[in-house]
Length: 74
Image (cartoon, one colour):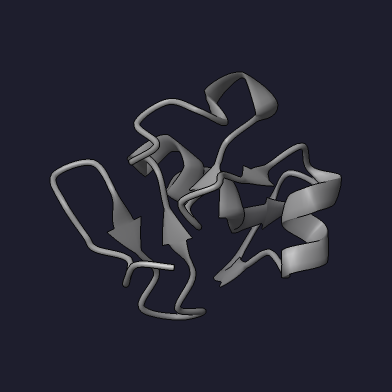
């Protein structure tokens, strides 16, 4: 697999190191509230991202949902 790159829409999380196909997917993996109460932001685990409906595309980037799975695949 090619090394993953960061671009104007694709990003890498400085906390967990995972790569995301969009800023929206990145935002989805960051948790800021639990039971509607603010908490120190943290990352979902790989298992947690899968349980939340996120999927990793063939290029290795996490997507927010199966609907965006092939968007931007290169």
